[in-house]
Image (cartoon, rainbow, N blue to C red; front, side, top):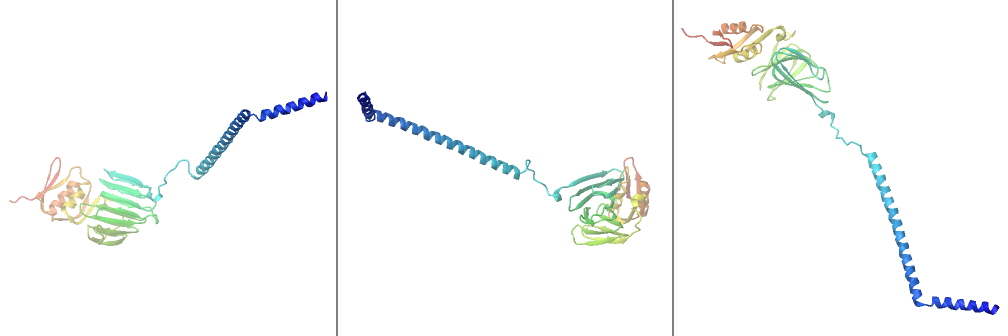
Amino acid sequence: MNYSHQHDYESDNALEKAIWDDPALLAALELVDAHQNEQLERAKKRRRLVQYSWGSAAVAACFAVVMWTLLPVNVQHSIPASNLVAVQQFSSEKAQQVSLSDGTQVAMNVHAQLEFTENSRARKAILSKGEAYFSVHRDESRPFTIDAGNATIEVLGTAFNVDKTLRETLVEVFHGKVSVTSLDGSQHVELVKGERARVTDSTIEISQFNAIKPDWQQGWLDLDSVSINDALFQLNRYSEKPVVLNNVSADIKVSGRFAVNDIFGAAKLIAQLNTLDIKQYPDSIELSNKAEN
């Protein structure tokens, strides 16, 4: 019995030794082992790739979150307040009162044109035509400038009248103080209440006046030695039909106080003072030299 078991054991050992010594079997086992190792390496690589992908995604997500917190959702380029401009334009067929965006009040005479702009640093009005009385809202941080062609007026807060005539600009101060500069910059003056400046492109003449209320608001036109062309230019603001000249010298000077509600009467007075003929037509009033007898 023991011999039989011993024999079986020895047989098994001999068989096992024969199997493991078989070159073909060993080659097959090595091939299987290599295949398993290859699969294991592939699995490790896939695992590392997945980990790397998740890591990259996490980094990208963190970067996106950081950038989201640092940058605004809607990117807008802010405009400096000094560049934000308010613009107003006014044109008057008849006398009217207007309010500018800064609080300044302006009484516009007939057939006047005005443009106003402002920002956080300055205020500017352009009187391109006609006459206007300004009561400027005081703002020391933003000077108020008026461009009237051949004159520039600068104020902080005051009341004054500006009349842009044919070739001149008249500035009359009723309250406070203003500075006036000629177009070419060669002349500069400061006016106080009761002072009037007559400004051309290169000269400024100062005179006194009674600073109660602008003449045009009282129904009058005051002329002080202005050319006859300029006189008719101002009269025609109020006339339904124009006053025209026919063969009349432009050197004639006109002075006087004329009612703006009677343009024919004003033209007749100018004709009498300057020895001119006057004729009224359906579409005009004509002044001409007297015919020689």
